[in-house]
Image (cartoon, rainbow, N blue to C red):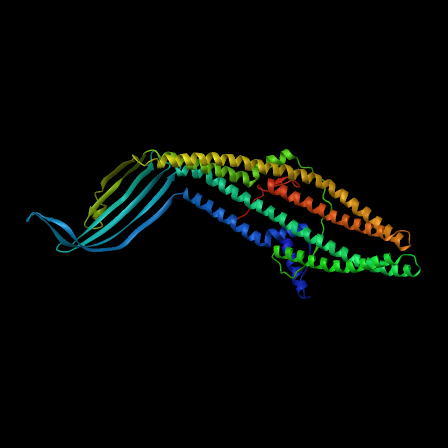
Length: 495
């Protein structure tokens, strides 16, 4: 069982057990949070269906490259009308009533020929007509087999452009899906550390309430022996009141952050989530040059830009060839026969050859075709320029993100050391205050430094992991394992 399913089953079991006790409770690591986001969030559902839409579009394109078999039927067609006929005896035109029943059908196999943009076809037909009136008679018309080919001789070849664009579009769809998964990792990381910060702030506020109450009681005792002034005692009482107010505000912020994470993971909104912060990550130096090379190969933005340029080139080719004259060829060879019964319709077959060459030459269109061609050329230039600008923007984003990531690794070590030093300094200052060797200002300053050091540590962790998942998103490469995410793509039909 892979880790994704393992997390899913363990968390589902934990929620079921906790629901018997009332409110569901969960303890999550960052890795579990990201796995659940990729599996259960509404974003995951949306991205999976976006991928499937692109997948089936590509499947449709591939199916269009295969031979197609079509059955065409007209089971019943009855007509009753007056038609104009020439009466040779009277030497005049007269109207005669005519009644006819018709039925027909045929099979056709077609195969597109991408290189030239034409279509080969193989078909067979059988038609039946019965005439009613003064003379009633039957006719069967058969085409046992006919082979043909048709195409535009000088026109636009859509098949050639589809061969260039459609595989690129599907590759972009796959990499866009992986890109979106990494974007979910970023979003889950943001919600995770927002809750972690809110929990830390709430815990600090609770500790602060207990500490300020203790210090206020100690201050009352010391005030009795005139060890501290009335102003200092009032300051201690004010700190205790402010600490309780801060605790209420931090409790509201904690509930909001917990609600946001539960909503993103598609959990029950009342789920009580507790977090385990990730340990200090191992040092991992990422080369800017390698990250840029991977981004150019894997980032879906580059594929999207290539697609846009190809589509603009396609439009130029289409408008250019439509501005000229067009010649279409349709040639077929086969056999056919007509008889008054079905059996004879397949005897003594007559050879059938049909060759059609049609030419369309625009004479006067007041510059419409030329205008469309010039618009297409200008749009191509705009698309190419815009693509270069967007490529530079992505490359700049990669360079800055890699630089931030490499810096964040050093900042985490400094933040850990600052937490240890701030806790020792606050403990020492608190003890000195208790024995009257430190004033209240020194104690307050020490407490503020301790809390700020803890906030900075969580912020450093958050920035590190956000930078890491952003690099993965931009390059679609797992630098920790050294494998490309594109090579591990195995999404099949949404399963």
